[in-house]
Length: 333
Image (cartoon, rainbow, N blue to C red; front, top):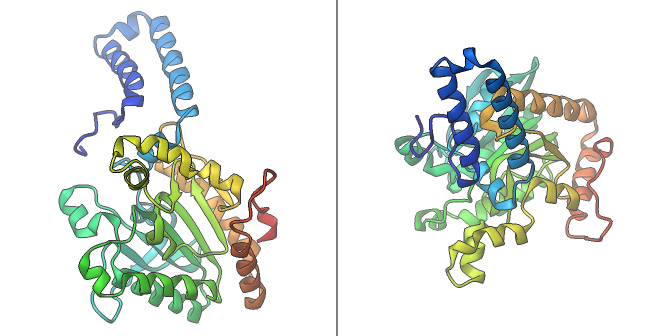
């Protein structure tokens, strides 16, 4: 069991009423009362379902950030396992080392060869230390760029999963050119002559996300977030170190999938089951599968010049805001 997570997977204060009701239901079943009083069980189940819909239907931006960080949430390798077959991981940047916070390789999606890459977090302390908590170093972004250039050479579509609190800010990372490697990736992805599909599956933090975030179609899971800075970092700056203001910062940053869809920053939001993606990873994978298939169908056979021009125009539109701002249509990809 993941440390800090209850038996039912509930972790946060806003989920406690649900956990308490589920506990009552389990006790009812354990003692045999559920069989003797089926109506009482039925009423409790209906009450639980209603409570879930109320709690998860009225989530604040900060609560969505918390769900995006849930330790049981599916990570990149989980989605790769659910969506692709015949996966061969590729390692190293051929300059320094292999960064395990960023994984990638070749695989088959619905019988079609593709390249897949993304940030990878750990499930426990040992694994998180190995994965550096999903925070990539320069060699991770250089590895990603090497793999994307391979995809371009082989004329393969690229599938990318973003899930990082940010690029690693350590001294060694800065010495090895962290900012330069991210900037180079942004530039090169803008002119990559192959279709690029990007999905924010959890945390989309700052330059760490942008380093593999330039694509033709940007998707977010319903409870993911995408932001220039974490709510805690923003609160620390604006309220002079008071991280308790993180919920206010989260609301002000407009970092939720719903906000960013309305602003035209992302193109599509993928539904999650009540309670988050960790409640039913297969459900989310099926929604992702359908989204990727639509994208590949619309970009299949598209001339490289047309693809690049549309990608250029997509990002040129960002930052232009009005009260009538809407996301672009999928048919315009």
